[in-house]
Image (cartoon, rainbow, N blue to C red; front, side, top):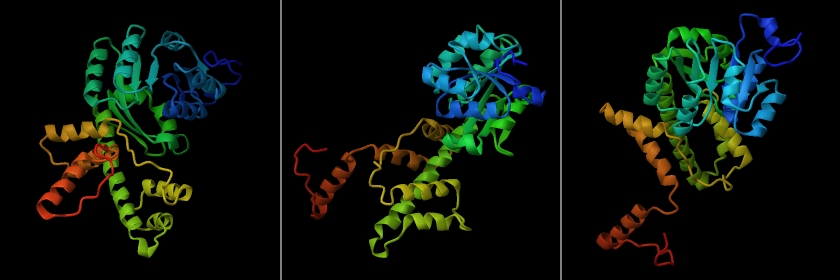
Length: 325
């Protein structure tokens, strides 16, 4: 017997009637592609689209039915539909949602699993509500490990829509790894704060390991200490587990350039703290440290060194180039 959606024999969905869904999935990058794999493993039927031919072919090999346009995604789903987006936040998300609106119908559900700004999600939910379309903003955490470990899902939006997609959430997340956290916008708000906390944690680990690295006379094995701290210490965490892998691959980090990007959530969280007149010094400083990591040489540090030479006669280390930055 062939499944009408995926065209394959003895579709797994037949074995879990009532527990699986037919989902349109847009975006097959590192996160989206792996999420599709987990959904397929759970027996869900997936219609997938992404601009990349290679990513579509991989999804097809994994069992998804891939199509060449957003229009085809919608056409291959029965109403009421569920279309899940995993595309870059900002302009791209807005364009994809704008293209989908005239294709969707009353009763359909649109899910944004990317890192959109929560105020954008509130506005999108309000606009879609006028058309009878439900919108869920799903903060998604798990990175490249989500395929194996599952994704932590923070869902904002209408409770009825949340309940309708529960079968998919159960297969995407580990046990107790998903929750409806509040109204529209709250899912992406919680994910924004999650990432801001992550900034601060990473900064603390980075500074701690740098301090140990600087204490040359002890000859500390940082990989060994990473492993040690994960057994009973109060600072044990998954990030610390990952640091074990880091030091196994490159004990001195000689191959790693200390250039740290930010993807927006930290900035949004700092701006939110300012709007609320709430002190968030650790998160704010961790964001600023990322900016600092991108400077080849800090002009402010050069200024401080020069001033110390002026008022205290402290030695100024020369670069050898008058205009060297």
